[in-house]
Length: 243
Image 1 (spheres, helix red, strand yellow):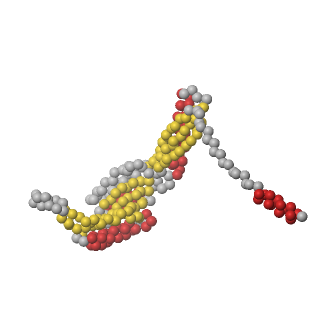
Image 2 (cartoon, helix red, strand yellow):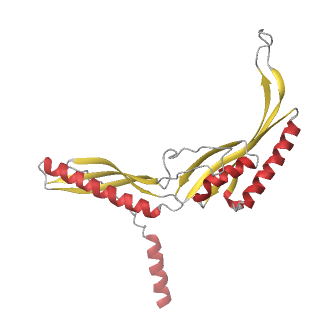
Image 3 (cartoon, one colour):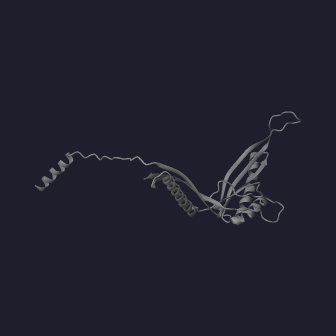
């Protein structure tokens, strides 16, 4: 009997249509005046790493010869970096190029078509230095080892998290101060925060903060001044003005 009742109850449950689940989204429009502020704060500190670009260029009558000679010079340059204590993980190839070279100059004052003169090969690497005090010394070592071009250095902070936290707190405090000012100036009692969005740039300057000079005949290392780099936070905040 119990089994029959159980079956009847199950059949009844199956026959009852399932209730539809409705989801309602309610958006309440802000009726108070809203102030939108863009606030940027920057915290500066001494950098703890430098990035230098370097490489070699070679020219030869054939493409194969240009590449072979370039590879040999680049091997010596990388060996020099290893000898200077640069870890392999901090050396990264940034570009390898091979281009035909032409002479477009006029012959005897008469216009002439381009004259093929050979091939130029180049190999560029990016180096990360974790001891920035040795930056100038390394630049000189690279040139002595056969580097035909050097770029940088640029400076950065490996972990800008603490600086970003400081900049974020300062930006939010500044935004609140400005919002309270607008509220009081407009005759309102307070400003209530309703939204925040953030953009940040951590531990890198927007442009190089130094000038590097090479002195081929000088005994001292090339002077390099790292200065400071900044971590910036830009907040876009909205406050509702309340009476």
